[in-house]
Length: 108
Image (cartoon, rainbow, N blue to C red; front, side, top):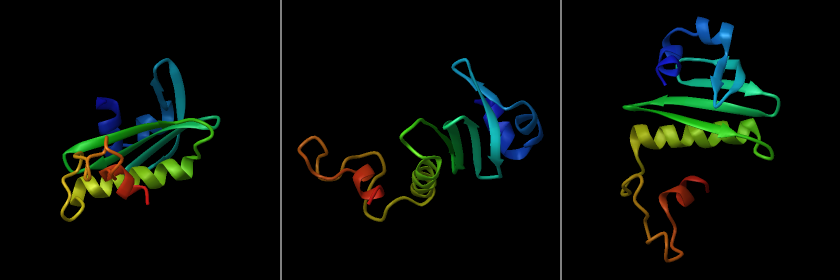
C-alpha cells in the first residue's frame, strides 16, 4: 500500500519496476496524480486516489479495463463529494429487500 501511495507523487519507481500483487507482476500502463493503472495481459490493477482514501480494484476478463476505470472514477467522485441525500456505504431502500443500493445508483 505504501508503494502505491508513493507512486501517486513519484511515478518513476512504479514506471520502472511495475508492481507485484499476490505473486503476479503487473507493468505500469498509465500513471497520473489521480489514477495508477497496472496491467498484465488482459488483467490489471487500478488504484484511484481520493480524499482520505485510496481505492484499489483488480479486473480480469471479461471485465474491460475501460469499464473498471469508469467505475473506479465514479467511486472516487462519490468518496470525494458524496451523493446528495445518500450516505455512502449505507443501502438506500434496504438492499437486502430488493431495493436499490448506493452501488446500484452509481452503476446507472
